[in-house]
Image (cartoon, rainbow, N blue to C red; front, side, top):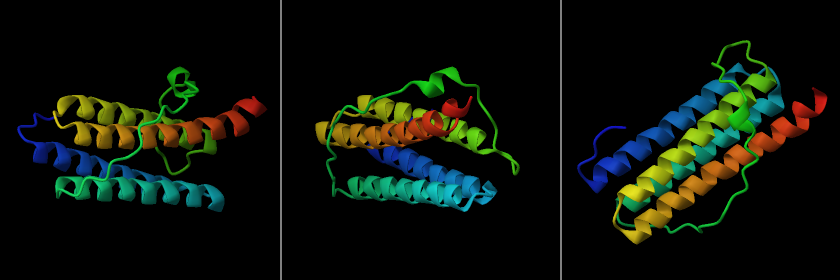
Length: 151
């Protein structure tokens, strides 16, 4: 992780990561032959832009405190191998990639929340981390329902 010397560096870093996540999901959506999966990944891309907007509001002094709640973790992504995005990626591979991406985003926001002194900002970052955890949970449930069930 880059060295951050100010709160603005933290925000800029997190905002950049949300834009990268949006671009990742849009790219993944473009690789899907199944129209419903394409829409799912486009929806996640929109949610990442929502995170970016929240971070921009917080950076600009309009902090939107998010609810801190425990999100269940099925831990499926802990036991599956990494995959790289390809044009011919199947549904299982796309789900694995998305789970791993969301797990990394969760860890990022939890780490960032520990780097700040402002309790409101820490709660904001934990709230975004929990949203990323909910994304991962949705992918894990989908994986459990549509991949593990048939294997």
